[in-house]
Image (cartoon, rainbow, N blue to C red; front, side, top):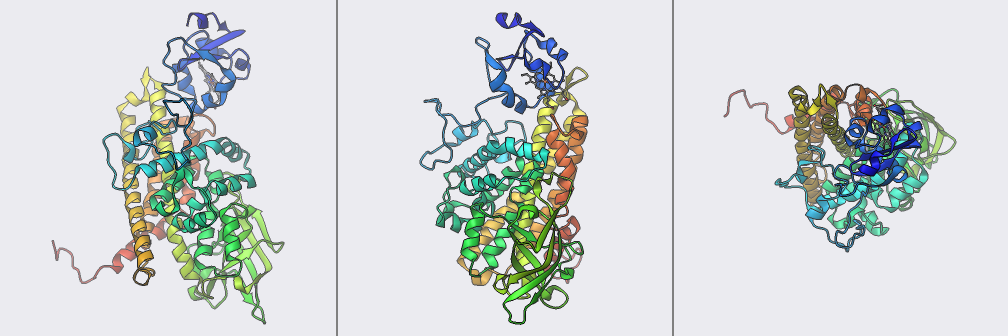
Amino acid sequence: MEEVAKHNSLQDLWTVIDGRVYDLTKFQKLHPGGQHILLDVAGKDGTKAFYAFHKNEVLTKYFPRLCIGQVAEAKVGTMWNPVKRLVDTSTGKLIDINDPSISLTIEQLLAHPLLSHAPFGETAAYKKYYESPYYTVGHLRFRLACREFYDEIKEEAEAAEESQEYPSNEMFLKMGKRGILACKIGVMGMPFAKKYGIPLPGGIQPDDFDFFHELIIHEEHCRLGCPGYSDGLGAGYSIGLPPIINFYQGPRREEIIREVILGEKKVVLAITGPEAGSDVANHTTTAELSADGRSYTVRGVKKWITNGMFADYFVTAVRTGGKGLKGISLLLIEKDERVQVKQLTCSYSKSAGTALVMYEDHVCPADRIMGAVNGGFKCIMLNFNHERWMIAACILGFMRLVVGDCVMWLNQRQAFGKPLMDQPVLRFKLGQMCAAMEALQSYTDYVTFNMDKYYRRMKDDPKTWANRDYLAGEIGLLKYQTTRTAHEIADGGCQLMGGRACTRTGMGKHMERFNRVYKIFSIYGGSEEIMADLGVRQGLREWSPEDRLLSKM
Ligand code: HEM
């Protein structure tokens, strides 16, 4: 510190953060917070001042350029660790978490630098002294492997979120090669991961993959904190490939699934139109069968089609029959000059590639029908279950990120001479948010557990179980509850972070994005009102109306 103290002017400016010494002499002119404020910490320990104004990622970015050493005998890295991977403490080498031949204990995994240590920053399953009936060591390893992947792409994601660019083709190929795409459609993707020899994150084997692994990857995907980019990175894929796998039996089935799951081509689901959303019976895009029965001519418009701007395949709801639900079919449409797309500007980044899709007498081979002719409604409804649950999982992941940010903020920000965390009224607000989020987590875990059970029952005994859509109502209620909770988190988080939550850069960046986009999720995939109603209607199905008030204990 004696040596640091000598560098205490604008012409020669060192400071110490977390025990490491930073030479800010050249950087001070570029410092976004101004030059002179740095004089307050020139030649001194600037840790407290630094964390009052910055997120850790500022250090991650500038560390290689500005760090020139460390203070003798200082305890470095207690608050921030520049190494973001697991390290073998005996050899000092990095551990490849994806290598299945390496076994890792829960203690080793819990020391992963990417795991948040903020209270409520991770699911309670990883808390000391807690046990979970759902999450295993394998799930934690899988989560951390996914987190490493998303950490790797974070810089590109941030840049694209702000510049409104679409995710690159290379990014899709990377996700395909690393098994991220296969995992994003859950157990449905596993036979193909096996078939094409795609390795999965954390070295997990396809046969061991369950619904909790899928829940985790959706959470991690959105924990990236770049909502437009995250949706750009395969929201269309996650809801567009399952119907191909489940209902398309045409000649190009294998080829299309292979190229999509490997990220070579992109698929979207095109159901909603400008004329109708949840009201599927009133969709007006038509597909007219040719006289020789070999092709359909498709005409109409679809709206809010996520990833539509860069998709190769459009799984499209079309009217092949008369009015109502019984006249709807699903068609697998391949992009050509008669499928035109136009970018829509939505609340989040254009990275999501949300499009208006215009079918201008597009001719589609008749063998691209998915499921039965005029049987599209059932396919759409079955697909919705997975989609709605996935949306809920995504928001939960994003929610944990912003609640973790709020905890950090309250701890780092000083007001009236003490950290905000010392104000009971703010702790109460945080408590309300955490209670809502943890209740939601428990509900999500419980629905996920039952989805997994249902899937296994169906696999063992498809005759009895295949058509029992008994989870649709539960999933509807879960999605409803998730977006209601998101409303509470957005509101409370904004109050806690103040102006930072309304500023697109800086410490409240994630909160600002969460606030700006959470309403999207309460609409797409089924509006809150439809979700709650579905839950109640399904509940009523299992109940006898003869049951009178107070007639039983
Ligand atoms: C390694 C040293 C530092 C680096 C690399 C750095 C970098 C940055 C960056 C990138 C920003 C804009 C980030 C953002 O929008 O979040 C920023 C903002 C700021 N910095 Fe620093 N900084 C350093 C040290 C400090 C110190 C020691 C102080 C205080 C004494 C300080 C005070 C500020 C202030 C007041 C802002 C504006 C914050 C706001 O807009 O809310 N910086 N700094």
